[in-house]
Amino acid sequence: MTSRTADPGRPLRADAQRNRVRILAAAEEVFAEHGVTASTEEVAARAGVAIGTVFRHFPTKNDLLAAIMKGVLAGLVEQAGTLSGDDRNGTGLFTFFAQTVEQAATQKAVADLLARTGVEIQLPEVLEVLGEAVHGLLRQARAAGTVDRQVRLPEVMALLASTCQGALHGGWDAELRERTLAIIFAGLRPGAAR
Amino acid sequence: MTSRTADPGRPLRADAQRNRVRILAAAEEVFAEHGVTASTEEVAARAGVAIGTVFRHFPTKNDLLAAIMKGVLAGLVEQAGTLSGDDRNGTGLFTFFAQTVEQAATQKAVADLLARTGVEIQLPEVLEVLGEAVHGLLRQARAAGTVDRQVRLPEVMALLASTCQGALHGGWDAELRERTLAIIFAGLRPGAAR
DNA sequence: GAAGATAATGAGCCTGGACTCATTTTGCAA
DNA sequence: TTGCAAAATGAGTCCAGGCTCATTATCTTC
Image (cartoon, rainbow over the protein chains, first blue to last red):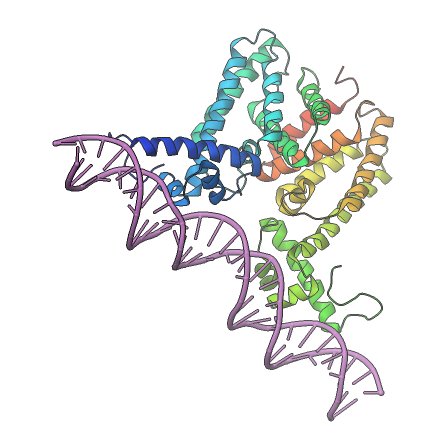
């Protein structure tokens, strides 16, 4: 679904393989900088490739977006996994939250993705995976007593997506980011809701 | 700056006056439904007017957006003022917050506005006014002891904008909205931060 | 109820951006 | 080294949407 020639067996030619990598790298940069509305032309230019080549590899702009979104999401999931690994004191969720928001402030694509802005990409299963990863952190936090037991996954994801969006569009600086997250974290603490 | 013919003195012709009102009403509906990317054509159609007429009144799509944004903002400011008026127990800020987020969930324009998404509208002074209105509610809340004294305006605005964005793009239902806001409100309470 | 000013109309211009395809180039296998 | 399939190229098509302007219709004033 990502390249015109059928995948089975036949490996890509060397130049095709090279260009594919270049295009993905360029797209990640361009979309991170300018958001999902950046033009395919610009991606091609940055990759040092003709526009037709981009469309040979990704028949649709959406396909290209989906491909890099998958990468971005995988990165987030991995971060969550790492934090989950050595989460001795149940603060992994907070760390993950802060890291992700900070990323979103510079990488437009991350926030656009989390908000599913505009582009209709079908990544339910991948989002599902991210949700699971965050759920893991949430469970650890609840168990460690750093987050109230009443708190469920949907609202955590909602807060995460919101904050990423806000940080991106609002151009929050580090201090505002910290003060804002502090309020959210405080609201998650056991007994905070009452 | 909003109409081609100079404003001084000369009142609009009767038909022009009528159409101007229709266009604004149509624009408010259309942008609320489809966000700021909706086409000017659609606004004209809904107003029952030719496209040229829209551009006679608002030489630029941005001018049209700015005009209705001003109206939306004025509405928010008024709500804040009303709540501030009879805020006996310092819960006005919370009520305002909840109302605005609920509006944003249905009126794309509100959230787009608060996030300054895409369109470059110069409404600093009007946003300033909204900020002042919210500041009033915040002061009352701090005085009444419903919000921690450490909490400043910027983070409140940041949370407000974020949550509106999130609610809109994420399509939150009433329950998720409530659960999410509950966490934020809890985080605002005195001593929550510790 | 003219006459002139003001406004409405809508076909069409123009730009940007997604996407195509005939042609050329390149890699690979025999 | 040669032949051909795979891939690259980029000028060009198509379309959407912002915006224009010559023409026509409508007010308003005297």
